[in-house]
Picture 1 (spheres, one colour):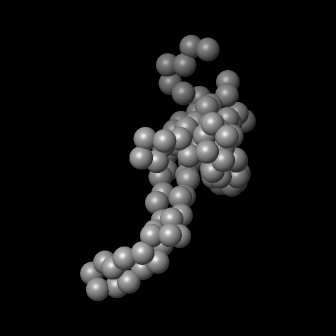
Picture 2 (cartoon, rainbow, N blue to C red):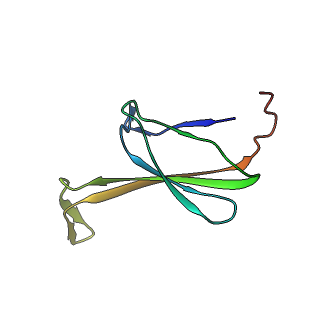
Length: 89
């Protein structure tokens, strides 16, 4: 079974972004989303898998609580057990 993952930013798929995966044994894997914003991954062992994506905005500047900034970072994570419970395929 292969997992197909998608990440949205303001309703749009993040195309060609790098995804990080942490396997149940702690190994880190880097994956690249395709031009449609989809990444596929085939878990190789049972356990909890963690996924993350970070999006950098270098062109955003402003001030927050008196501190100036010249960029922002947005991140998201997902953890799930493998095999998926209730999976019939």
